Amino acid sequence: MKRKKIFYSFILFLIQLTAIAVYSQEFSFPLYFEDATGNRDTLILGYDPNATDSIDPEFGEINIVDQPWKDQLDVRTGEVKYFGDWKNVAPLYESKIQIVDKTCNFGHQNNIVAWCNHFPLIIKWDTSLFKNNNCVTGSLLNTWQYFAWDVVYGRTAFLSPDFFAFESDSLIIDSIAEGITPSVYTDGEKTIIMMWFAFADTATVPPTGVVELADQDNFSIYPNPSENFLFIKMDSEKSGVITIKMFNSNGQLVVKLNKRYNANEAVSINTAHLKAGLYYVTLIHKNKLLMTKKWLKTKN
Image 1 (cartoon, rainbow, N blue to C red):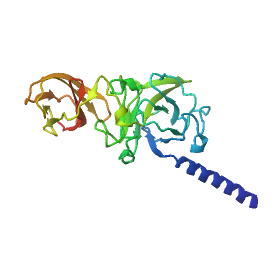
Image 2 (cartoon, helix red, strand yellow; image 1 turned 120 degrees about the horizontal axis):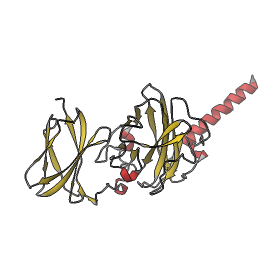
Image 3 (cartoon, rainbow, N blue to C red; image 1 turned 60 degrees about the horizontal axis):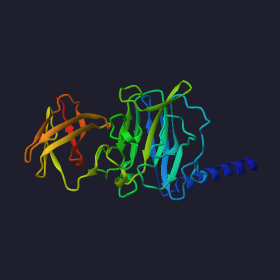
Image 4 (tube, helix red, strand yellow; image 1 turned 180 degrees about the horizontal axis):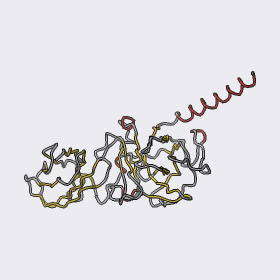
């Protein structure tokens, strides 16, 4: 009996030690995953100046790359990737916890891999953890290599409510064969989804195809909410051609138009074909990205 008590005390000590290690980093948060049948999994992602981009046992990281995938849902982190270094191949190591070096840079990305047998796969996080911290206000989760972060090819979400574009508290992956296909690789008979996550300052997030952000330019959208038509008016004296992009709440690009705009005049967009729900409207004028606005499409 005494030996059992000593053994259980030792196990409890190890659990406590692991918990202390996991929560001793400068910043971390849980990323939650749930499939269509209710199976769940969780990752812990974070950063610390003393962390490396490989396995750090002192932060509770354990390499599980040799463990077989669970039957229904299994999500893991992989090694950090850098600009130009992404490939659709299995990670060199995998873990349930990934604490990386603190860079606050968009090009410094955590690889996330997932086996999901029942789509859709829903990913959730607490947006309040990404407030009032410059190192995470541009944090981004994407299902395609980040040269296509504008969600033309994949699913994308910004995690911070302080960021001006596409902020959300969840991301939905409908399927691996939905036309907008995430990055994947095969492991035996399983098709593994690949995702990328970055802790980033907004200053390091480059808008695809946009040279710079506008300083003061703004625009109005009305009526809001509305059904079949949406009007957009620039708040400053401008004219020329503007690019209008609309994204649904899953981060999918659903409208992309080039419209000629005259100062003090509104341009119209036919939205009758869109489903009811929340959309994000972004304008690009003379290679400058203007502020993104939320717009609600009501039922027809």
